Length: 184
Image (cartoon, rainbow, N blue to C red):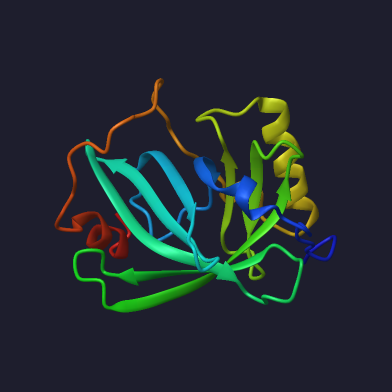
């Protein structure tokens, strides 16, 4: 299946990783609206060393979001293998959903990253800007191929220029979440 064993970044500087990241491309998932645009994640370090995760996207002109947390899968390891936890549904967050968040690659300036997980069912290309140079994008795709990802499933995320600066109107009922479960 994989050409190379999946390696992750070692010695990730978590403080440098904090801030806003734009989703340049991803494998579609039931956890995101299929028509989402301007998708982004904002990471904030908490006092206890865990990370607050705010994932946002705009669907039908409305802001949809979910908040969760991230933490090191093994606190004694220097590998960038994190766990993320969200509570669903967003309008009544009672069920925990936990997943792997592995930083497979990050550039030395912490401007773009390749995120995956061991099953290879999820993949994200993230960038500090809402666009990424084609040459860099293709390099990240090749890195994903090299560790066994089927990159034909990658979907580029549409972004507006400039990106939304404010939160905008919310989908407070979580309708996007219900629609995403139905594959819409």
